[in-house]
Amino acid sequence: MAEIKVESLRKQFGDFAAVENSSFTVHDGEFLALLGPSGCGKTTTLRMIAGLELPTSGKIFLDGEDVTFNRASERDIAFVFQLFALYPHMNVRKNIGFPLLSQGVPKAEIAQRVEETARLLQISHILDRSVSGLAGGDRQRVALGRAIVRRPKCFLMDEPLGTLDAEFREVMVHELRELHNRIHATTVYVTHDQHEAMAMADKIAVMNHGVIEQYGTPQEIYSRPASMYVADFIGSPPMNFLRFASGLRKGLTSLRVGEVDIAVPEIREEKPEGVLALGVRPEHIRFSNSSNLRGSVYGSEYLGTNQIVSVETPQGMVKARVSADLKFSLGETVGLELNSTKLSLFDCASGKAIQSSLYSGNHHG
Image (tube, rainbow, N blue to C red; front, side, top):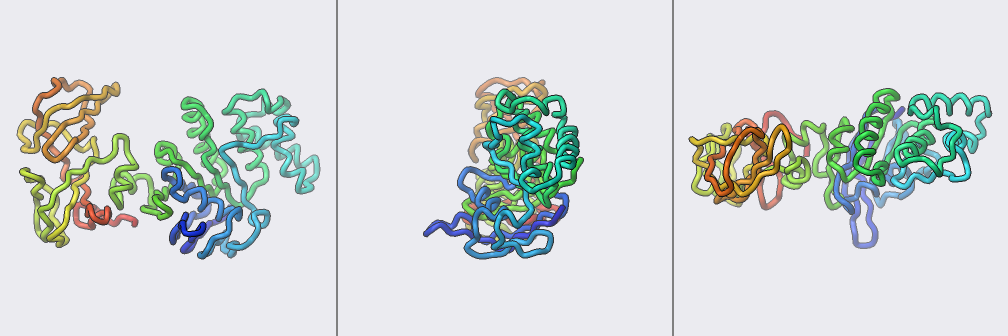
């Protein structure tokens, strides 16, 4: 397998910049998810790595070789699409073996590699069945088998689970990660689904309007979002934002949010002007009668072991993930206590995280 390195990649379609100055490295055997909404540039980035689109500028290296302007057929990459194009007139065995047949691989070796791949994907029992009668999950496994059998340097996957229903998708997310652990394939995986990315990826690149907003591990991106966009896109429910305009001074250990003082770790940056936002995940809020941040219960969503409670405060709607055992009435006034060690701080004008001691360690921009 191989390392993929992308340097200052840019793609312009007329006046529209689909991808803007993207740089990242996918190390040998690593699983990277390109995550973002429709139109953010993730598929265009993938297509440039594959050689299906040429970049306007920038470079792409595969296993140390500059392949920026190489044809797709010269890159030793396997591509798995959302709409897996299987040959309906061939059975599963012939579909999986077809790429090797096209390369002139001897029939005995094709048979052996197809059997190995089928065992890996646990589809040996359907090798002689027609693909046209298969369920969606099995069809997806066949499409994966056709990519795996080639033993390419890396795998590129564009929303491969997008056509599956929720139940199948959950099964396939688990199977894809298990498969990755077994074959240690360098993989770039495009998805708009944060749950897929968080469950499978070693690293995630969160994209927005052609720009990589943040690149890091799932834990880094969830715990220390580099921007309000990332904080809002990742997490269900997303991060709460409490906006305020009191400014920052070095040495502060509390922030004035509206009429309320909220304890924070010591501030290390000066920012005297502008609207700021204090960010807190729903699970880092608890109900406390002694807290001076108060609001009225607007509604709740029962999730079995816990519940999401919406509380209307003077600073806006706040969602807290609390124990399902807690009882309250709609309209009841409650106090909210924020875990001061888990807060994020953002500049609302730029949307970027402010690097103060609210962050333990560095974050990746």
